[in-house]
Structure formats: structure tokens, C-alpha cells
Image (cartoon, rainbow, N blue to C red; front, side, top):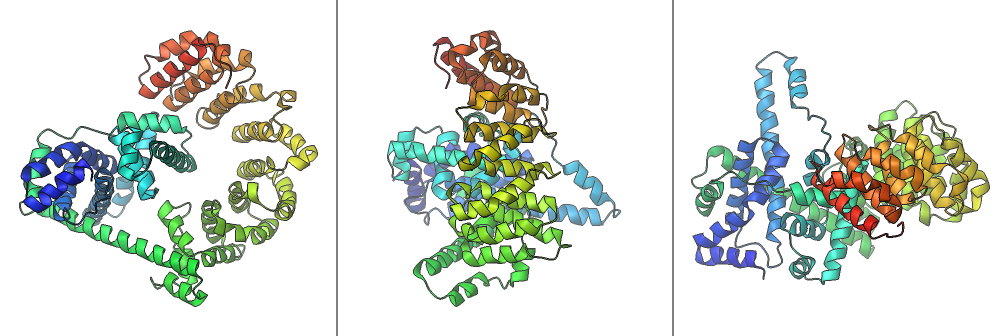
Length: 545
């Protein structure tokens, strides 16, 4: 049993106020930080933090011996924050209704988050939502590693695994966060994400908050204010509902795994009283992982519903867009592969490019493992997509075409042509596709100048171009000066990737040493760390990597 649970058991069994106070002192910054990121308001964050520890006091004797308390506290803080935001929205709505009708628009503008340039300011609003999508062990591993600075050996001991297994779990969990952020328009690397979380994830709770919480929570909320108790009740309801939803998913999975009749599966999927039409209407366009997990629990039935939704009348673009976006998110999973033949037929007849682009995006997941028959059926549609006026259609076609090594005579000329595409994101994708399908002969195309030409687009293609220059680590005489210039970017995430990319050139990047030494004083800690790492590689004369 870990030390946290030892203290919790001491409190539960012996009513040790000192043990509970020690737990509060140990974790108050963690809980406050989660709440502060979620709601923004420091005073509301304090109230949420108090509610979380009241819940802990009430549940002290029911938490299992394998509980990772820091992970449990993070999840509970998100539940309490979600409830607080719901209550806050309802209160704002009531207040707004008392004023003029058009004040709704003004309030929405006032509350809209400002676009931030720093990497952490981009990650911060998404972080807790991303963590919520992870499995429990992945979630707890990241909390232990980056919120509590535990070693891999300590993480392994807490999770009942080896040090190497803990290291692999943390890396896989970081890759999932990277995928989550990337799908939401934030281009970064797992190293940058890890550095940013480690550097910024904890905020110091206000002085005296721990003592106040200990006093109120030990009394299990008896002395708490009415609003705090409302948060406690709401969070407990969310926790109970989350547990019930998990049970539904597990039961559905057991039914499918054991081969019980399809009729039973249908009944399980209709527990919430939804018809197929209601299921489709409930889809949120590129929704979160909770939506994906729910639809995965429906198995082949869910995939069939989505395929039927894609056959909606031509004028029902909205339904097809939402169904295609969800199918795209499910493309990584085996169940979705059953949709491939039908989806290829639908792409052949789809008239709206915005829908066709998303449908093509589905194949990014399964394309490598598709049968030759299905790949052959898709190939003409990919070639047709390259002529589309919609850049997303062309881009997603290139993603798939790089997996056609037997058709290089047809594919490579298209990719070379795309190096001059009007859309810079497509140009970068063409470089990556050429490097994948024809790694030995990419010198025949001027790939590095193409990427350098994309660096001016700091609002779009530049960041991916910087990363790709590092991955190619070629033509150092051209790439290194361009990366030195990008290292001066106003955007921290471009400076991060520029510093990392220069290190990939090893000793060939010696001209970058002064710029990297200057970056050691950058305002962003991740830039400083990556610059130091790259300087070590360059000064050691390492080969490009």
C-alpha cells in the first residue's frame, strides 16, 4: 500500500486529523491547479478544491488499495469543475434573461478565450480534457510522472509494473496526448508536451487554503458554505454517472465478446431510449473521446449506423459531415475496418468536397493494413481527389497515396507537382509523402527549399515545415540557416521545434551554436531545455539523426 493510502486509512479508521491534513498539504496544489485551469477564476478554484477534499473525506473508507490518490484527485477535481461550470452557466443565463435579449452575444464575446502564442497557453485549456480521455493507468502514470515528479521506478511500483513498463506506458500516454492536441490544431512533439506539462502543470494554492480545507473536510463538509456543498453533490452525481456509463460499456463489450445474440446488444445500445435517428442526431462534429468510446461500445452496429448516415440525401450535408467526422475518429480501431468497402463507394458518389475530405481522412488509420483489393478500389478516388479545389481533399489524398509503393510511376509525379500547390500545408504533406514512398531518391526533388518556402506561414504550415526539416536533416547548408531564423520566431512552439530540429543535424549544425546559446536565455523553459540538448549533440560532433 502506498504512503497516500496509508495516511488515508489512518484517517478513515482512527479519525487522525494529522493524517488527513498531511494529505491535504501534499496534494492541495495539484487539485487547485486542475480547478484553476478548468474554471479560470481563482476564487471558484479554491471552492472547488475544498469540495474535492470534502468528497475525499466522505469516501476515505471506500477507496481501493490499488487507488492512485493523485490520479483520483485529478479526476474528482475535473468532475467538480465541470459541475461548477454548469452552475455558473445557468446563473449567467438567469442574469442575462433579466436584461436585454441581445446581451447574450456580448457575454459570449467577453467569455471567449484569447488566442495565445505561448505553447503552454495553447496546451493548458486542452490538458485536463485530454487527460480525461486516457485510460486510468495512462492517466495516473502521467500524473505521477509530471505532476508529482516520480521516477519511472516509483511509477512502476505504484502501478504494479516494472520500471521499463512504466516508461513505455508514460511514452504511449504522451503519444495519445500528442494525437489529441494535433487533432485540435496544436502542432507539437511529445518532448515539448512533456516539458510544458512538467514546467507549468502545478500552481501554488493560496496561503492558508490547506489549513481551511483540512478543518472543513475533516468535518465532511458540515461547516462548508451552501455553494461548496452544491459542488460536492453535483460532483458526486457526475462520478456516479461516469461509473454507471463505464459499467454499460463493459457489459456491452462482454456481450459482444461472448457472442450473445445481436438482439441483446441492440437492447443494451438502447438503454438510454435512443432510436438510430437519435443516435445520429446526438453526434458532435469531431467530438471528444467520450463520444468515441460510447460509439466503440456499440461495435459493428455503430459503424453500420454511421455508414447509413453517410447515405443521407444530398441536401443533408450536416448529417454526413458529423457522421464522417466520427467515422474518421473511429478509423484507428478494428471495428471501423468493416466500413471500408462501403465508404469507398460513398466517396465515388459524394459531391460535396468538405464531406469527401473527411471521408478520405478516415483512411489515415487503416490504410497500412488494408487488403490489396480495397487499396486498389480506393486508388482511383485518391487520384481524382488530387484534382479537387479543396485543399483538405488533396492533403488527405496525399496522406493515403504514400502507402502505394507499387504505383510510384503514377504517384511520385503527383507528389512532385504538389510541391508547388497553392496551399502550403499541402506542400509540406507532399514533402513528407515523397520522403515516405521514395526515401532513397528524394534528392531528385528540391524538398528542403520547398519547406523553407513554407516557413513564412507562421499561422499555418511553418511549424510542420520546421519539424519536417528536422526529420529530413539534409541539405544542412540550406536548412540550418532557415532554422536559425525560425529560432527567432515570436511563437514559442516554433522556437521549440526549431531548437529540436537543429539538434537532428548533429555536427553539421555548428553555425547554429551562437543562436542556440542565445536560446539558453529564452523566456520559454522548453526552448531553453531543447537548445541545451541540441548544443550537446552539435558540440559532440554527432552524426545527423
